[in-house]
Amino acid sequence: MFNYPLILTDYLAYMETIKGRSPNTTKEYGYDISKFLKFIYTRFESNKYNYIEFEEINISNFPDSYFKKIELSDLHAYLAFLDRKFNDSTTTRARKVSSLRSFFKYLVTIRKILDINPTDQLETPKKQSRNPVYLTLDESIRLLKSVDSIENEVMKKRDRCILILFLNCGMRLSELSNIKISDIKNDTLQVVGKGNKQRTIYLNKSCNVAIDDYLKVRPPTDDEYLFLSNRKSQISNRAIQRRVDYYLEKSGFDTKIYSTHKLRHTAATLMFKHGDVDIKILQEILGHVSVATTQIYTHVDDESLREAINKNPLSDI
Image (tube, rainbow, N blue to C red):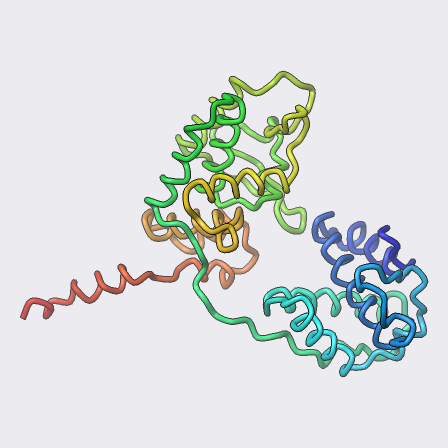
């Protein structure tokens, strides 16, 4: 698997088959840990790998003895490397810390090749507290209207349906791309989220109309997935991202700031701000394990603050 050492391949198999992690989550673990192992190679054998491009470093024969040499200082150096070399955000580095903790726990408790876990004292990089980026109601409508000029009727109906589901249901990219026609029952949709957890999404009128309109022009095929590529097979996550980026740029939005995930933020924010949706209900809709994750969408904007001040009974005195 991608020239991974056997111990990493075994770990990923353990996470997917025993711990029940989704294929996407397992893939992220593999990416994070392989990058760390490449860094350790360059750190422990600097003369040998000094002139090799980082991505080209082969870790398939990574020696188990190196794991016993890793100390907390090596982990700190790795996080500094991510910041300096890849300009990773604190959120990305925090995810990589979580991946390393899980991997070293496996080395200690399951494989038992380590007595001491070097990640026990590793702190998670402190995340910056900031409000999520989202589209306003008017901006969301503008984005939807950007699809109207598409001449290809199948593409127009498909892309409009994709945008409407993102903006109304707040689903994740992988959840949307993996929708099967059989998952839709009247006004409900079954999706599989993080950790292979299934949840029910209730479809409003706009979603139902968009799905029906697309199904009327959807090319005949044996493929069970709702959204198809031009090849009449399941559309990929990357293809969906490219289509969303196209409409964002068409609507005047910077794709370095806005993305498919920002449409999830938009749906959550609009439901909370305009729909008066309770935070616990919003948690269920978004598929968050903890309500603490959902609380980032309960932010208030400048207009709400201005309105609150103007409602003070002393404002006219």
